[in-house]
Length: 91
Image (tube, rainbow, N blue to C red; front, side, top):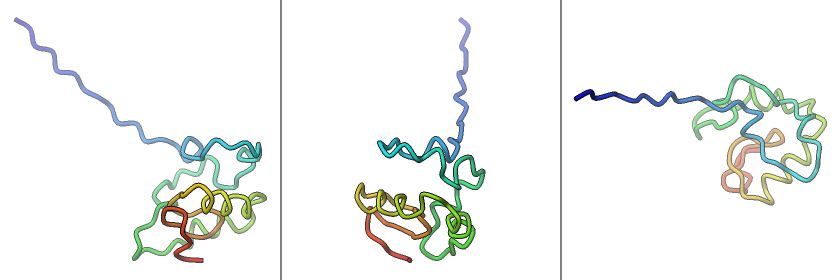
């Protein structure tokens, strides 16, 4: 009898894959698209989010991104602000 061990590779999604699909059509313009620092966008409450806020600073869809987060109950850094289930927790 032969026993074959199967391994499942864990593949981390890119930030572009984490961005929500939206009818706005502007997500392709997001400054964070393709950013390799996934953890920066979902900081623990005790961590700063200066990196993410800096990337958001010049983003052409910053306002729409924050509005989307509030409207759809997102968590993490959106539009340069930190949200928890759609509630603004750190501006």
